[in-house]
Length: 437
Length: 138
Image (cartoon, rainbow over all chains, first blue to last red; front, side):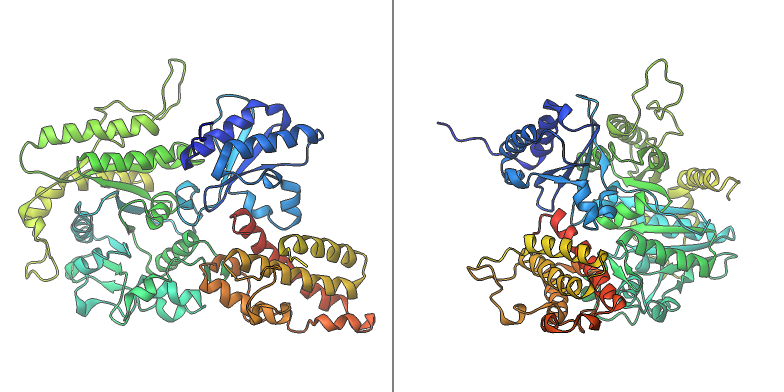
């Protein structure tokens, strides 16, 4: 007798779907798979079916097929009626529809994860109307903070009022670039999360906005909500408490808490534009800022296999996002740090790789009879994969506008960011519905 | 005896609801308190509470009824990565006026408003319990 090959995590869901599709008549129209914190799967049926003998057989079969990723047969099937009666109705609304090409059965997945759920949730409602731009990079060190600083400076020169949130909490960057020590407000974002957890957000809210000196003398202004303030003190114990999902109102998801903080600042500051600097990588902060904040998303990248592999993980996951049709229109690649030599060839390679990532997951496969679709040719300049370039410049490497006596060097800014400014202005104009300069 | 907090939660809760709906407030109240206690112990067990071979908690401070267990549970869950299972519960224990020995009292002492408080608190606990159940913690 040979030992059975163990079932691994990513096979388990496919096995469960296959087991269900083998005899869909047992389940009616809809079935939900509940995947627990450890990845173990159970089946949730709307109600008890009449033929319990067949169900008993199914329980044994699926428990056996799932191995370590199943439950004992007698615990394998749950009933919605039961859960609703016990007060679990609201939890069921998180289930998302899975693709099923085998039968007409609608199969949902209720994924009970510790973290990472925001990558698959919809946009949050907000009261404010100002445009928001999220700066995201799947990897760090691609010049995000520098671009934010120069672009904000350029916008302030045009008379715009910019509000920037440094939400790269694990590695604060833009706060330091824009706010020298003397300009730091008393508190920062970590203080807000900790204090709002015990119902005291108002005690720090008014003292967590700093005014960047790089906008002094300009018609507009740059206000920064930094990760930390001058009175934040020990940062790590606060950071560790930032992600709890409880605040003064009781249970509130982390995404809702971020939305609440950003919205309150927007209401008090009335900015023309909000910039959300996200933490890099596949982190929960990024999940919220990219998919849930009603923002346009600039996806920073350099042309490297590691970058494209990481983006393809994310895009593949988004393929089944219930709101993918809405937010895929709000993504835009930015080629950060485009090298000084062979720029044209570099950008062409970048564009092809970005196109591959979009085409494999987020662009529609277009059939001749289709009239509405979301798909672009590789060389379409308005396409989300077509990179907005930020040119690497020696002066940018040492960019530190707050300590330099001349602030931002105009020539450096133009050399590096002219294309960026033009394309992103167009993007914001399209969002607000007016020419935005 | 072998304690089964999961099963005991369900049967006490179902019976408590049935009695409450029939205005049998005194015994409903008794069972709401027991359902709440069993649900909390089920989650604590899932979060790593030590138990004896008979299924009862090893630690003396955990071998108590809901009027004492409520705060014990909050602190235990908070220290065991179970902060999501205390949402909606704070140190104002709604069962502080509940006592298992009230089963000997006259039924007229149990008003519908007082029992309703315990019913609502049990509902909150049940919501946390069901989350833990779906998470595979129980």
